[in-house]
Picture 1 (tube, rainbow, N blue to C red):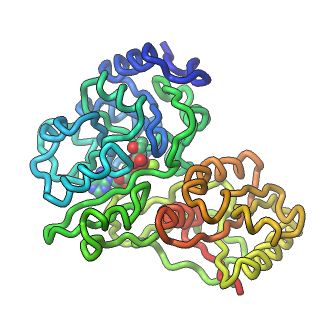
Picture 2 (picture 1 turned 30 degrees about the vertical axis):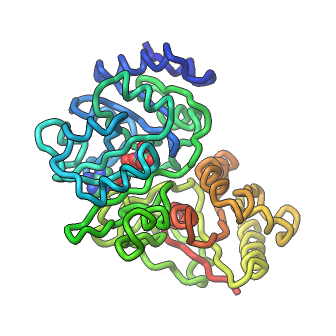
Length: 376
Ligand code: TXA
Ligand code: MG
C-alpha cells in the first residue's frame, strides 16, 4: 500500500519506521527526515530501487547519490580506504551533516548510485528517525534530497509530498529539518588536504578545527560558479533559459546543475551598505511591478525597516542576520513560498560568507543562476 503518505501529518513512530524499513528492504523508495533535509531513500545495492529514485526525482543519471549508514562498521563493506584526515573528520562530525567521498569498493553498491565513479559519498545522519530507519533496514541507503530535480530541497514532509506524491512509496514525517541545508561534501586529496566539494552544514571553520587551517581548500560559497552578471544586465529580466548555465568540471557532479530554483526569476542584491542594497532592491521591485510582475523579496529581519511598506507582493524574512542558523533553516521553505505566491521577479539580500553563510550564499547563488546585482 502507499504506506507512510497518510501518516505524513503525524510524527513517525516505531511502527511506521519498521514499515518503512521493510519497504526499503523490498526495493521500494521511502522519504525520511534527516537533520539537513528530507532524503529519498532506497536500498543502495538494488539497481531497480535506485533507478526508482532517479525516476521519481527526474534526476540526471550522471549525478551520484550519497549513501547513508547508521554505524561506522558499515563503512568497511563500502570503501577500500579511509584516509587519516577523513577518519578524523568522521570522529568529530558523525553522526552529522558531513558527507565524505571515499574510494569505492567494487561489487557491493549498484553502479547507478555512484554514476559510474570509482568513489562513493557516505554520510551518517544525525537524526533519530533516520538512524532508526537505517538500523532497521540493515542495508546501505542511497538518498538524495527528496525534491523533484531543480526544486528547493524539502525541509518538511509536506514539501516531499508536494513534489513526489504518487511517485514514491511513502514518507516518514519527522517534523522540520534542523539544519535546513544539505551536508558538507568533502574529499581528502592525495596530498592529505581536505577539498570541500559542496559547502553545507559543517562549516569551513569546523573542518579546519580538525584538519588544520591550511588543509581545507575550496570552501568559498561558490568555488565552481559562473561569474555574476553586472547590474545593468540584471535589470532586464532575461529569458528563463538563461538560468542554469553549467560551470567547467565541478568536482561534485551535482554542483553543475541549476538547483534550488524558484519558478520566478531570482537575483541577489549585494550592497556596500544595507541601506544602499535596500534602496536598489526597492527601486527594482517597483519597476518590476510596473511591468506587471508579481514580486518577491527575501531579506533579513533587521533590514525590514529599510524598505517601503509593501515593497514587494511577497516579503519573506530569513530571520536575524546574526543567526545564520535561522536563515539556513528557513531558506528552502522561503523559496517554496515565492512559488506559492506566484512570484515572477524575486530579489534576495546577500549575507556574509562566513560560517554557515557560505552554504547559504552557495544555495542562493545557485537558485539565482549566479545573478548578482551590485548596489551602492
Ligand atoms: O544533506 C544531504 O547530503 C542530503 C541528505 C538527504 O542526506 N542529501 C543530499 O543528496 O543532498 P543530493 O543527492 O541532493 O546531493 C548529493 C551531492 C551532489 O552534489 C553529488 O554530486 C555529490 O553529493 N556527490 C555524491 N557522490 C559523489 C562522489 N562520489 N563524488 C563527488 N560528489 C559526489
Ligand atoms: Mg539535492
